[in-house]
Image (tube, rainbow, N blue to C red):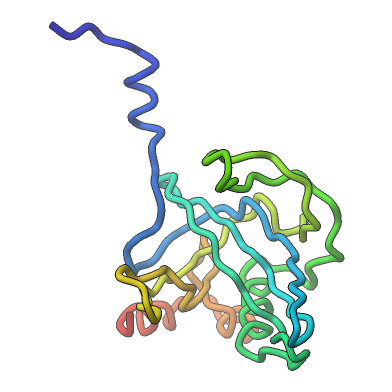
Amino acid sequence: MFKLNKQEAIAYDQRGGYINQAGKYKTTIESAVWHIGQNQNGRSENIRLTVTTEQKQKATFFINTSYANGIANEGGIRLVNAVLACLRLHGSGDPTPASVKEYNPDTKQEEVVIRDCFTALHGRQLGIVVQMVHEDGRDNPNPTIYSVFEANTELTASEIMRAETEPKQLSKVLAYI
């Protein structure tokens, strides 16, 4: 009745889907796109961080660094600095044009496009603690970054900055999600 189709068997293992549960994930940064929004209230700035887990699950997070009225978003700026610490980088570099995959709602497919990116972050390992958050008007919760950590040591940004060698903070963080 059934005959083995090697491509279909391989494709089954390659599925991944999206992060849809709270928890600890070790990820690879696919892209860190610099996005500037402009509307009647002014200019806003954010980083669109797309990651893939070890299980090939994807997620895209928006790290807002300034609001439309030009006021800095302290939480977003702190998160960017925590990411840099967990990647052991002293800076992100300036955004430069790079090829990234983006979902096109018109074609309903991922397409390669050119966007301004922080390419120093691309391909790096980052640990992420995800919290599922219910937003107004939505039936299903969205994944949000609750915390970040160094993927190979599980040290958090504060532990790295204090030159600690034993990860203690991550277990406390996980107790809150």
